[in-house]
Image (cartoon, rainbow, N blue to C red; front, side, top):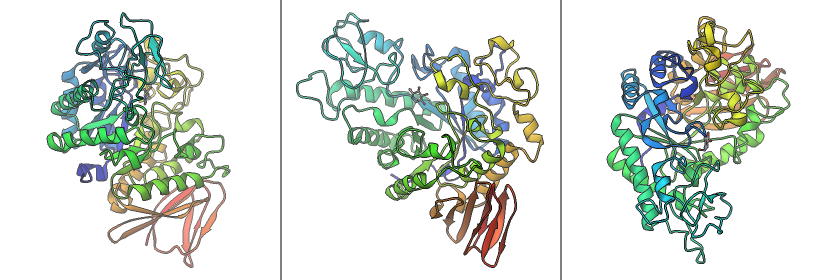
Length: 512
Ligand code: NOJ
């Protein structure tokens, strides 16, 4: 595989949770046309691409990660034409759009599942993982049982209303005839159905996919070998028919996903990445208290980076719809330093909508659409000081999720007008990154110090930039540092006698 679409070299993604972004028809819920209307805002920030959370027809038991029809935009968001229009408007601005592909499960209301529940054999009998008796449970997977004429239990993938699509078992147990091999007819048909969905949206103009739970498709596949092989097959299909399509996986193991043919993988809040140590624990590294540590994060990152080489990109998100907002643990000044880090690491950065203004986690909400503790990170975008923070002209009670009620809730308009705001800092940091190839997706990284400050060098060709990130309130001196300070976030910094003297709460970029 080559290294993927060239635009990924400079890509900065903006993740949009469609129901909470911008409501153009006053029903209290965001829509596709709302995203189109706000493209200029996203472009102004400096982002070059979007990832949209699922926007397809769904009973919304898991906010759309329970798809009922992969081919139709959910009416509450608009129409397929609206989505195609969004693709076109994005392309006119030289931006790209990734859709969210949910290959591992559907909603129980999906017609495939309804057919597969029937006792008589049909085209969809093997579309999901069913045992051959209602008394037999698929081990370690959880199941739905007792709701069909079919005598069997159906494995589930996440919530118990999300039946697992059948891509087969890496090593089917000989005494469990219902466990099918990856190359059995049913699993292969599921795989082809997945390609059809991808084909449909790529032909309609989307630029690729973020793939939900990409590492979990083949069952009893502890080392991921079956799932990797499956994605390699999909890569061949894409190389042949849609070589420009960009693919990012929710997998969290780049040494596997990138071998499978993904261009990018996320470092996530689950798995061994220690990502949470930086932003989301009792003593996050980016707090000025200076009690947290980045050591384990750096060790895990290095290991992944060495394993992966130039195979693809390891992407670090500011947050996403599944984790707490950055602002739950960090204040705006601390978030500025966090963004100096996020926007100077290799891989394509992903900014979760609203993180650029430090939107807060809304505490004590009743769960909405399977959000549970995640609901507080999914509240409607705060655009201005007007009604419903400019998100919607519906009455407040109709909003998809209640908003942050605080008087001083951040909003995009005020922050855009204030050069000292978090948004202005994020915008400047993006512009700075985009001017320096060493800081972009493929520039290499060498860590020089993993304590506080964190010091690393990014290089591309003859350009070498030393990045010093000092989140704690204590100042520090970094020896053997010469050159020009190109950019600084936070407080004072100067180079004297080959030493960088950096104040607390400061990040600097030094060109060698
Ligand atoms: C990961 C998604 O990000 C999450 O929101 C969803 O609930 C699960 N996968 C199940 O699809």
